[in-house]
Image 1 (cartoon, rainbow, N blue to C red):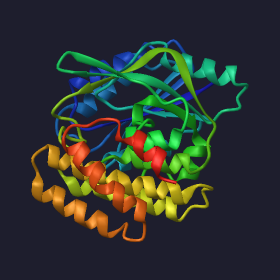
Image 2 (cartoon, rainbow, N blue to C red):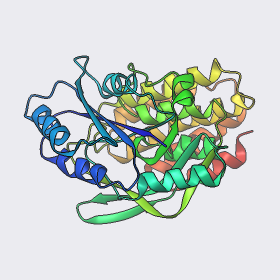
Image 3 (cartoon, one colour):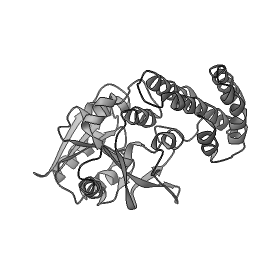
Image 4 (cartoon, rainbow, N blue to C red):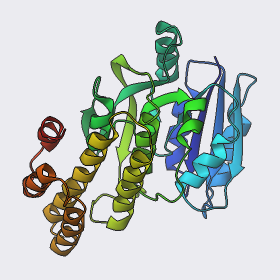
Length: 312
């Protein structure tokens, strides 16, 4: 089974080498690797070309292209337009995958008799040598994605048709774009399963990450992602869309609480007040909002459990 992997790259000439090496070690074949240079000003493009020259074989096809429109979403969409396979993965240029990752996905698809649209895996995050595991929720996919971004870029494989039906990457979303895409993917009611026997994706947390290390860094970009997600759900025919919209609106108070936790009182109050005005018609949400805001600002964790229980 042919699997395609799209990797956008911007100014990561050294860091991407480890990522590419982990891709080349995949035991599954055939693979189609699509590397998209997004206006790099260092020698990233030559590194990608060198990888193609050294690693490409008949069952390991490598395309290197350039996307002049700035933004990781534009680069991913450009790569996706070259995909002809039924199954598609996206991956980030600063992370690595175990050599069996793609094989594990393919095994799970076969185990399900092909009756599946998304296969996910757990991941670990390495921040300055401290490694923590993040598990994919095995149930309540939508609710858990809203609060934990289970469908992050590098953690799943999906049918190309599902990606296209969801609308591809939203190039107007500059932060949390994988979270926003995940919302639209889940609106399609996909059949989702997880690989259960290990951790096969390794995420590097560093200060050059596109997302940024602090929630209050470029706050409008995160807020825009939530606004886009709310709009997508509101304009869908998803069977439980009213509840999902409510949960998304409560996600705003989690974010406002994180601003306050980081000491950005003005940003926190601005976003809290604007978000509170948007729930004036929901009595329960008005009661929950200040609780969520204060609890998160004090470092509290697991607030989603309360919200999933109380929001109907």
